Amino acid sequence: MNSPLLPPGIEPAELAWRDGVPESVRFGDVYFSRDNGLEETRHVFLRHNGLPDRFSRVPECGHFVIAENGFGTGLNFLAAWQAWLSHGPAAPATLHFISVERFPLAREDLTRALALWPELRPLADELIRNYPPLVRGVHRLVLAGGQVRLTLYFGDITDAWQALDFHADAWFLDGFAPACNPGMWLNETITQIRAHSKPGTTLATFTSVGRIRRALIEAGFDVQKPPGFGRKRHMLRGVLPVSEPAREYNPGSLAIIGAGIAGCALARNLAERGVPVTLVDSASGPGSEASGNAQGAMYVKLGVEFNDQTELALQALTFAQRFYDTWRGAYWHPTGLLQLAQSDQEADRQRRFLQRNQYPNDVLIPVTREQASELSGVATNSGGLWFPGSGWLEPGNLCRALADHPMISVSWGVTVDRLLPCNGKWHISGSDGTTIVADRVVICTGHLSSRLIPVKGRFRFKSIRGQVTHLPREAIQNPRAVICGNRYMNPALGQTAVTGATFDLNDANPLPTTESHRENIRELTAMLPSILKDTEADGVDVARLEGRVAFRCTTHDYQPAAGPVFDGEDSELEDLFLLTGLGSKGLTYTPLLAEYLADRLSGQPVCLPANLVRRLETRRLYLAEQAVS
Image (cartoon, rainbow, N blue to C red):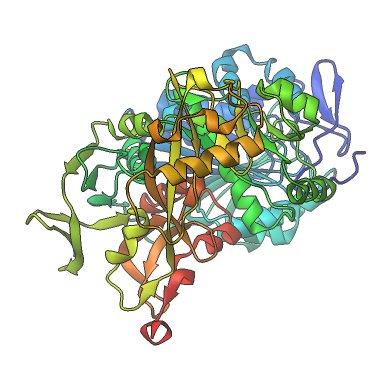
């Protein structure tokens, strides 16, 4: 058996292959029927949950939620996905599939197992391309252009059902036979299944064990024992009785103030779910402020301790890598990214980080100085951490691409100076007399967000000036990958490479300065002494360099804020949300936080566990008036 790993790693499943069928060495049971695993799934889980017919009745912009207690090879998921594509609505709608796996398959084993089903190959290939690294916690996979969302929890099932926020329409109770894996079938687990169900929720399972049947009945399900598949005489199916008809969810009208990377990504996420959005900004187009740089590095700095902060950073990193792959070769350049151990302090931090954590190689790899130089294409004075799935983006172009969707309407040139509730709606007033009315509003205006929040007191935001410097390609040793330390250095885009940025807490100058260019060059050459072709930093005419200034927004604890706004009395302002405080890591955090807020705004299962939702709450930012004075 595999021994437990340091966080955040998780032990993979150990398989034995017999007659071409995978078995779990740990549990001594097959992953699917030797007779015909796909037909078993269709018989037990699809047919006895009535899924083809129920899929066809999902309304426009609606969603259907399946939860499962053992992902295994993903066969059940792929069968449900295939049925959704065949029987689900043609209009925008989402199939959510939520599954837990304590011992996930390695990618190679997953590929081999799913190769047994040629008819599922296009779906299997997409799943395998997006399969997450083997680290504990929640992984959200957006598949089939957003028609299918898979939430995978790698860890213990009781932890999963306590951490995740959803209500299932149907349950697939899989996860090896109760005699082989009793922990999966505890009464506590069945109680949690009931808590994540609603009137009309159905369930199906291959087992017909009396103890399981009685526990399900005690939890409130009406349970039957129909014929099983193949050589199994019986199985179980159940339904939670309906006491009153469910109400249809209505997203209403929605406006997003701020068309930077956060606002544009959120608008696009909602639009692809069929939710119409109005995007409002004072500029003449998207990506005009901090998101308007020609280049930006996509990275995080993972903490030495694997705590909530580090978990959020890791989830954001891996989700962003999958999200941006749509724009690979256009606005996303996954060159790999090198975090240098350029100082004694950083070298010690990385040493302790590697001692206390175990990350799979598809997340990061420690490298020597020689390896760092080879990977980056530039001579370095130290080794560091290599992130093979990271790289750099073209943020301004990406914002424009995200905002270009028929479900997104835009109001450019509107400087919002007031946001007030009136008659159950929010009224957005522009300084030019423009008024926009919406049922719900999301504020994504960076360091200016506090001006729009209609709450007495203040929110603890910091505005940080950051100036980037544009270096001529002919003046540098052009790297093959992004290099990070006290500055970041991107491979050139055309004839220019962007480096930076300064970190100016008490400087409100919106214009580039020669001194900030000089600071960027000084820090860059300290990090990479051979980066300039002229070995003397003074060989670059700093006075002639171009650059750009933007103001990043962070919070008092340097963590993002995403969720409903609180009124200072520890209750939520109805239908007012905030997405800001992304600091210098906005390109990394935005895709995941946009997914999370879109989940909440559309009434769909949430992609983040409860501990990270708490980490993002806006109430921590609030200071009452007496505290301010």
